Length: 202
Image 1 (cartoon, rainbow, N blue to C red):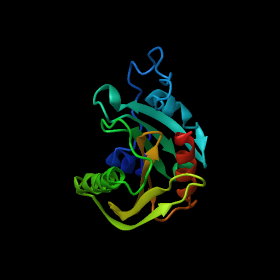
Image 2 (image 1 turned 90 degrees about the horizontal axis):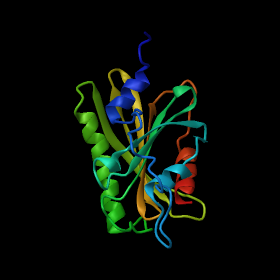
Image 3 (image 1 turned 180 degrees about the vertical axis):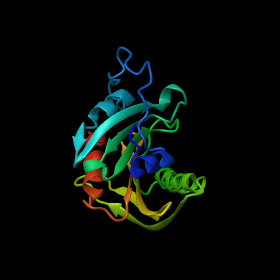
Image 4 (image 1 turned 45 degrees about the horizontal axis):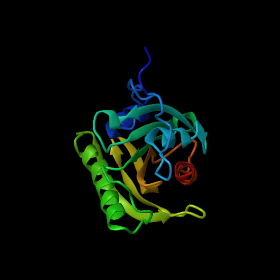
């Protein structure tokens, strides 16, 4: 049996590795959106492409079935497994997440997303990571995505994680992309963030 590549182990640390689909996600009518309302989670999951910006979609995990408000998460692999990503769509029980990156709800959720990524790394003795900078990533014709870049180490390997958050059709859209800081085939995560945001927003 082959050993898992270091990046896959890193993905498991961040909770980015794929999980098997849970039963019950494909119930009848799950993709039908109520008239005038926001799309269902199933409809939003279907919006996300199988391949985008060199990344390939893998597994889908339906957190909503066990914990209301946590939505659905989809895993992606970068080219030649040079990066791993998780795209999450959720609402934390809010009826309508505002379409404003500077709203109090979005700012609080972004801070929580960054804190969760740093805290998860802190539970591993071989991993250290800290926030380096923040920026807004422009999405043509739409609300930008707010992102934070985290840098650190996983054992002896230097790693970086991009944490991005923004609104998408009345829900939160969170994107996490992790890769080695030094890549044989460098992959820019920004096209992935922009294309996913456009797809999720419909």
